[in-house]
Length: 151
Image 1 (cartoon, one colour):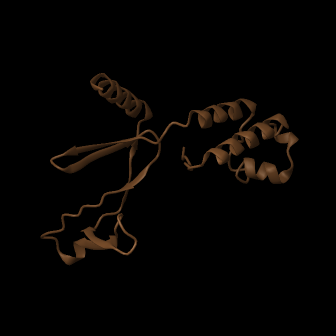
Image 2: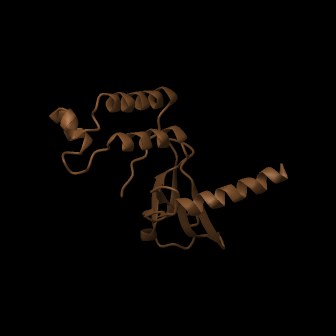
Image 3: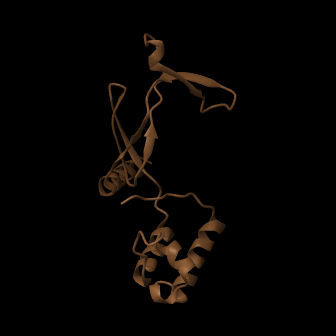
């Protein structure tokens, strides 16, 4: 199952919830109650099964919870050994240690720290994190408890 993640401000958040509840209250969770245009959107052109009233309730609850995207990055000896997240996540590793690399192993990319600056990094691509929401949340809760106890 693929997921789409969007970042919204508080006004957009409230509008999304209001639109979902309006959709739900007007019977749009029932396919026979909606016009063709809304049906096409709700089913992604008849590719997906649309949400019913119960599904809309569950979606509103998830939107209200606003769980942040969390990822755990494992390192050993300065090398990334794994990335695990609570949702689908694509990431890139920027390795600035290019000393001794051949020219074809290095690429120049925009710096994260300035629009007009560039940096050389070891040539890599994009990677997908492993998705394990329960494991990530369990680890996050354990670390949070340790940090709270030390505060």
